[in-house]
Image (tube, rainbow, N blue to C red; front, side, top):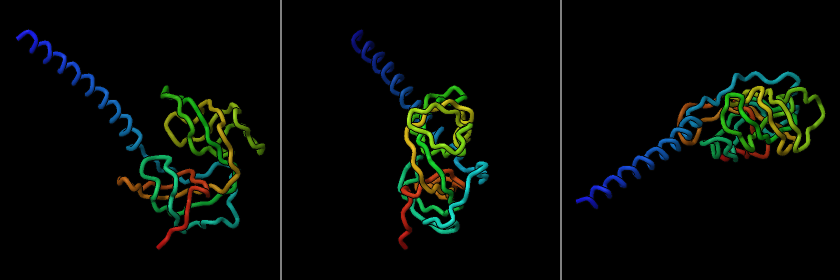
Length: 180
């Protein structure tokens, strides 16, 4: 009897611990997936349109990268195409969230006081982008840089959910032609 009671108590404690772990994992995924990733469509000051982009505004392409759940394989409608330098950055959100590593993409015009000079990996920066909560004004570090055409796109996630409008940014190498 005593042994059975102890086993039942251990089982209850283990279930409580496992339940709490599972709940945290689910909540963090839901918080990210339920965020509204649509943008205003307003481009940063100084950003210039690409004159002859591979994917012209109004055309469609397939997204080949998965910055967020449901992007990879989604059909994108091109809203705008711009020539700039795109950066992968690490940053610590201003809202107290955990450090974000390898965020794709922040462009030259979204980095405070970046000017025209390309930044090198390791450069310490202040982000002027507002793609995610806590990003604007956050201290960050450049991980890598790529001179490229960046695209603002509309797409419907392959995982379901509401269409995303004016998503910033997808690079040219992350798109492929739509095969009909």
